[in-house]
Image (cartoon, rainbow, N blue to C red; front, side, top):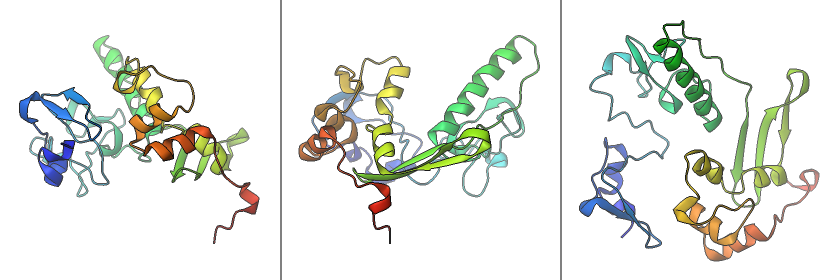
Length: 218
């Protein structure tokens, strides 16, 4: 039974789903204990969990207005981070991480009776994969410049979409309990990215990409 069976597509815009029997089953048959399931994917902001209490601070697209300290407008001590925050300046995991760092620091400062510090976004860093072989990225360069890189570098940087990195930061040994690897491993990629066994083996074996200059981008 896929996870989507509990609530179907409508569940993606609900506050949360309470899985039957206190568990969910992945498409690969892995059982995960779960009392509440929050959907954190998709292109639209899921505002169901806060629209009732913070309606006055919501934008039309569902984002919450944030002040300079990442507090919800009109609600001191309530902080907002990630894509649902108007603080932006872009909806990437890098920006969400910067929000989190600022909020954690401000909670400590406020608790100590000190002035909080305003949020200041870092320089743009965005890497996008296109399938299993192509991609593009923009990253900070010297003297305030931005560097654009192509397929091979992006695929090597995001070999597992940074999933292993964030599992480690959350204190988990690895995704789905297996040992964390430091590079592409077919089984790890297959579990983590829901790839077919064949595609995972191809990706783990090495990137088959042309030099950027010889690729027809038309």
